[in-house]
Length: 418
Image (cartoon, rainbow, N blue to C red; front, side, top):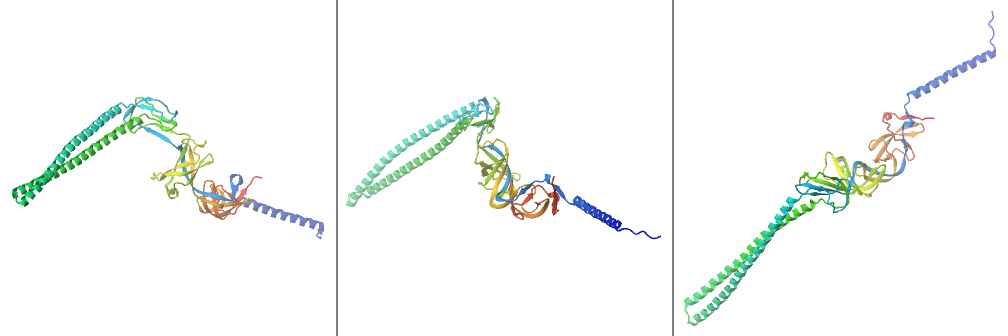
């Protein structure tokens, strides 16, 4: 039996069917490849990343410290003496004017001691006056004796001169001449002795007066100190302010040097700051500073640096340009940025967790739906900006979210919602 001949149409249909089959298989393979590649390729959800555009501008190199806003002025009132509280005139929170007393300390014992010192001081002054009068009388007597002695010397000198003339003329004896010489010598020595005595009396008076003056000064200093303590015991405000604390326990004993009240000027403030001592070389009095409060920067300078380091911490004071800014509140904690350098016209990118320090860094640049890893050199940084010295051009988009989980990958696909 002869095979039946297949028509050309049938053959053509079979070829088309076979071609379609191969096309479907190839398309399926391509689809499987694409799906597989999508499954194994690294990706990141675009909604979970933040990006920033590299721009050209200025950057300030800063080091970050912590700070607390405190009153620029605070008067700490301490008890100047061992005493007890007799009465309270103002309580904590009260406004107080300069010169107003806050409380009253018992000062009876100190007043008695002051009166005793004043009496002793007056006795010492009287003693000095009496000494001066006595020594003046003594010196007057001695000077009178000296004048008499001068007359005696003059008389003996005249007698010697007369005896010498008589003796030379042969009318007198040698004995009388020698006696006249001896009398003059004795009178001269006695005069010199008296003159020395007068000088010694003057020196003695000066020494005694110096000693008494010293005693008087010591006594006066004690009186002044007690008067100062009594004045301080009035616990007066030295300027206008608000009482932030007062020991209002009437009748309580207080020790000398114990704090009894605090007054603060709550209109002007400063910032007490601290930072690790590793930054010590960069801290200089006069350094510009920014104190950040609610994303607002208040400028100022470092006014003083505490010379001692405690537990690896350096303390310093920031004097604000606007000390009365409405944002300032006592005990408010703030971030303090000490400016150590300033650069202009650099490539900068917003700061974020994608940067860890300075120098060579790996970051990701957005190119369409792909994040491409790139090596850059980071320069100065501050809380807001990062300087990119090389590796990034102005206008490029950088991922500023942490990419630590993908840092070993050269590319990461960005999945975006359509």
